[in-house]
Amino acid sequence: MIQSNGTATRDRTSRVFIEPNGSGLERGERNGTASGRPGVQHEGRSDLSVGVRSRVSRVAMGVAAAVVLIVGVWFTVIPNSETEAKTPAVPRTLAVQTISIEQVSAYQMAREYTGSIVARRSSQLGFELAGKLEKIYLDEGDSVTAGTTLAQLDTEHLETGRRQVVARRNQAAARLDEMIAGPRVENIAAARARVKSFQAQVELLKRQTARQKKLLPQNATSQDEYERYAFDMKARAAQLNEAQHNLDELLNGTRKEQIAAQRAVVTELDAAIADIDVDLRKSTLKAPFDGTIARRLVDDGTVVDVGQPVFRLVEDQVLESRIGLPVQAAGRLVAESLQRVKIGGKYFEATVAGRFPEVDPATRTRTVILRLEDSAVADVVHGQVVRLELEETVEASGFWLPFTALSKGTRGLWTSFVLVEADKKDSAQPALFRVERRDIEVLHTQSERVLVRGTLNSGEQVVASGTHRVVPGQLVHLTK
Image 1 (cartoon, rainbow, N blue to C red):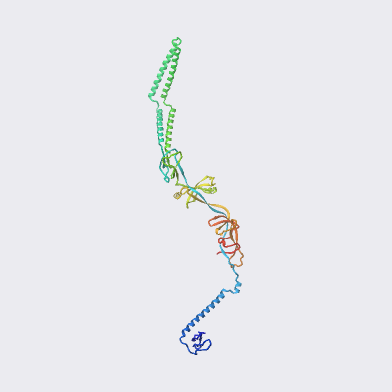
Image 2 (cartoon, rainbow, N blue to C red):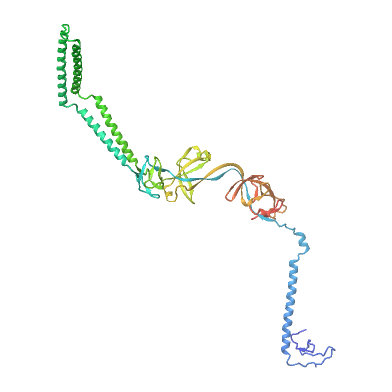
């Protein structure tokens, strides 16, 4: 033992004793005999006594702390049997997230229909006449306006023929002018002189015939001579009548019918000239509308046939899209209504311009024409694919569930898990539910949810996610 008022002494066996009066006594070897004297202090051992005292103090404090720790753990960790008997065991359950479902009778489904961009006008341009292609003025990719000259045929033969017809027309026109002006005075005078000449001849022949007739009974002349004078008189009388008619015609002027006939001849020749002019104009190929030359099909010097394509011209300033839709969907589109179409990753506004009056026999669809906005011309070209998305109402009864609420079933079906409230004995505990499996059929998918039908009821709680962690009959509680 160590006392505060004692002096420490060490024997040969390193045992320390404290004398009552404070002086240390050394004892002998293991035989127990004392070798020291009472009251005698050994010098040089004071430092050793202090070190021993410090080590003993630390050991004592460590032992006390260990005892306190062991007692505390005993009372904390090990419950007494009486407390365990009073506290019932709480079963460990999985927390799940659910959604409440409600039945729907219809749903909106977006359907996408594809078509193509077409120019409002696209033409294969050629000549209406056959001939040699003399000159081509433009090439592929050139933009043109309506009326621009594109190519020219050789027109030499047409120009020569036109000059001939013009000469004939001038001749007929002069004749018409003469008829309208009437006969000249000299012609009338000559006609009158001819009439008088025939009159004199007829008068002479009449007298000669009468004389021969008187001499015939007297046999002073022959019958042949008499008949010759008689026939000559009749011939001269006929010539007199003809000359008189000509004189009367000259005096009366040209008849209206003759003037009309001659005028018709002039008109006919004018039409022939106009026809040649049309051929001359058709020998020049011009652009019928504004656009861009897509293809040039022939070269200079080629002899082309009637209607043979020379250029393909596309109107690129006004574009339309033509999309085949089901008959019912096409009928729901209102004329001049705005629709949103997607072309090359961009969206544009388009106006419903019209619908084809018949169904395409190959696709069984009705083509709808959509006129694109003017700003689309810079980004859209002829032949691109266009997509139109329409919302349609589909009559179907079912429930909307997230994809995460589905689990693979058997025979092509899917399953979902529904929570049914379990027996509850203690209101202090969280409400527990039992998991039940329901077979369902997928009707339609939309974004991140799916429309299903099956053995589900409105108002039921369906496990929204983590279906791989639950099994039928398992007890779970709702997540907070």
